[in-house]
Length: 72
Image (cartoon, rainbow, N blue to C red):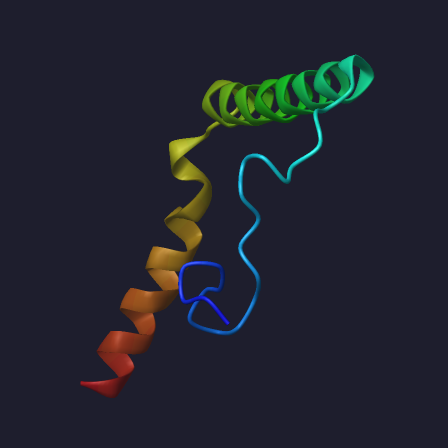
């Protein structure tokens, strides 16, 4: 058993010559999936920024200050 052919946990390392070339459809599907993922991430971030209301959690801070005053 060669040391260079295996990783520390015993899995065989695949060299670049052993890997089969990807098909054109596979490359397009990978790009489409990646593009869809990042566009959804951007849409969520922009939606959070557009509909953010700073006063939403004011009620919680009042409850927290009431609980703090009751404890101390």
